[in-house]
Image (cartoon, rainbow, N blue to C red):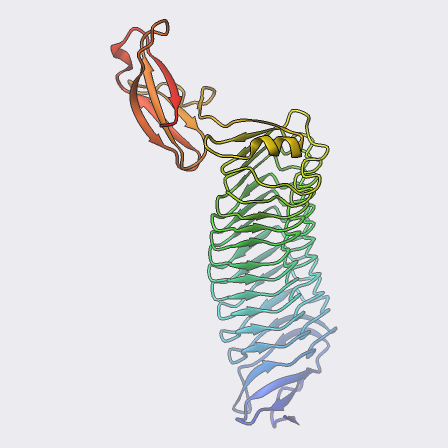
Length: 413
């Protein structure tokens, strides 16, 4: 490309010219104040901002013209006084570190035409507090919003398919994130996000990356999508505030150290029928007392339950196998996992001319409720067969008023 300075070109820009006559901003000669990039210069469209064009200048804002399609790598890196960016209507690609180190940016509304966000796009934008990734975006680069320590609000568009490693790493004020169903590939997104409390992982995700939530010490609410097949090594290590986790039936592998040092974890439900658990997967979970397994006993790694609660019990479904050896190798107790009537919630008891209660058990299991009127010489009569979805079902008996006393029991068919 030939370096040119078109006649009547704005004095604050230098350009290169493409073969079709369109222009690329090669360098910005203005060093401070607002920058407005026009749609055209001397009748020719400005289509690109080249790498490092405004790097390390004192500009205060930028308005990008409607013919610009590409913002190059480092284009506005370390513009420490820039508070506002207005995107034109044609920008599709933002290069690596394009706005890295822009410490005065507080909010960034990415243009609705953007399809790709480069690696470390807003790395160390320490005052950035809100970000919306529009539905046009397909790919978010690694470290794109890393070390944005003021970031509290993130909305991810519904067409994003991949998010690179550490995209939100060290964002210590980020509290809640929903990963949409469109996302199929991620890296260690939330490494050391110490304020993160609530995460919903969409059903398009197939793998929870190694160290994805490492040291998210406030994470207490976690929903794992139904198509996740593997949980990577150290994925939830040092997530001190997790108290309960349900691992869906789609999971085939739990990596080493995946829940190590989750010291407040009390209840784990593993619906999957996988064959092995990685080394030290639940080591030093000192409050873990209940692990519910939906399949046969898995083989164990080294020290999977080391330093756990002495009363930890593994519960297994009827018809599953391998539990005697599991108990010997793990050092924890085993017991049958049986359906339970929840007597402590608001749905227990008389409800609108009927008696009812919630039954909890493994999702997909069938429970028969029998009833009788005399416990001394009981004649149990089946009253209802229930298929549990999402681990529970509500049972109600409208005929309870026909008897002076009515007793119930739960059983598998």
